[in-house]
Length: 391
Ligand SMILES: C[S@@+](CC[C@H](N)C(=O)[O-])C[C@H]1O[C@@H](n2cnc3c(N)ncnc32)[C@H](O)[C@@H]1O
Image (tube, protein in one colour):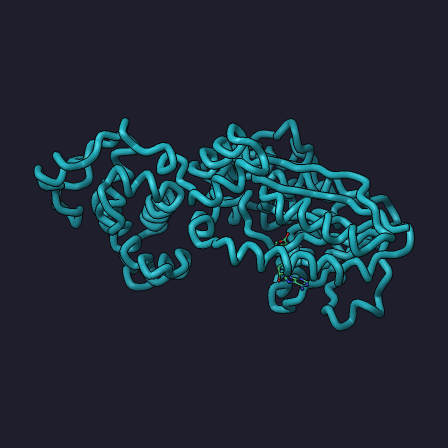
């Protein structure tokens, strides 16, 4: 496909998103209906669509509308790409931008500050209240950019330099991340990583650096039994299972979400005991229980940009209620003298310290012993962790 045809495809997909359909489903449907598009075409189209979703308000301002064509015109202007490079009508490219339309497009210097942040106003206010204006605005700006890609080196199988060398043999370049001892940041060709020998033989897993840092901050010692209460696909379980002599039990309210854990554990050479929630009481108590809670994902919106426009104040309140409930359920499985770790990939205080405060008021046998947080940055997503100690 020509660059212009890729832009035309992105326009079609953005129009299909207008009714709030999930972007992954729309991209998959488009690929099924357009089999001529190769993997590089699909990747380029996906990049266009995600760039617009991350920069929705500013693209709409720059393009003069919220239909797919206007959004892509806006996106090209934000990237300083001449419109006639892709809007020329040749080889399935979109039609040229009419002179009258081009003349009516606003001067980018006049963009309102709130559009330039590409975040709903109520969320900017909430973040400003929690973190101050400077940090809140920095978070908004970073969520407008593509996320860096990180791998976790499976320390049970390889050192970071060994993993980097193995990846290089398959043409993937990466570098160690000073702040997180298990992390490798990829430089290029990130889409091929799942096909490398390093990945298929379990030397590396895809995992954000802040998720890795969170696990490295858990109070885990050899010989301990740890419960990953919200294990999902097992990212944190796998990272914990790489710590020598830590026995990991993975559980989740949804057994279906845990389907891939045995295959991922086998690839990593790790042992993870997958237990459905109904059977957990028989396996309790645990020395450490991790609650990687369902959350707004506000620290990860570079990767899932639709979420920032979909979140409502009501949905956020519901989430905090769910988080409190999950924390109470998980607390039942903590041994006397054991620890309960509460984590979210959110930067919003109501989901973090807010939930902890409510919990501590009602559960006097727990006290907070440490707190750590990571803001979205070039070194990873936003993450929050509090460790609670049981008497
Ligand atoms: C942030 S995700 C976990 C991600 C996972 N730990 C990982 O590293 O891949 C939150 C998980 O919490 C689970 N969850 C939601 N409500 C729950 C509940 N009441 N009890 C246990 N898990 C719950 C969801 O099914 C989801 O898999």
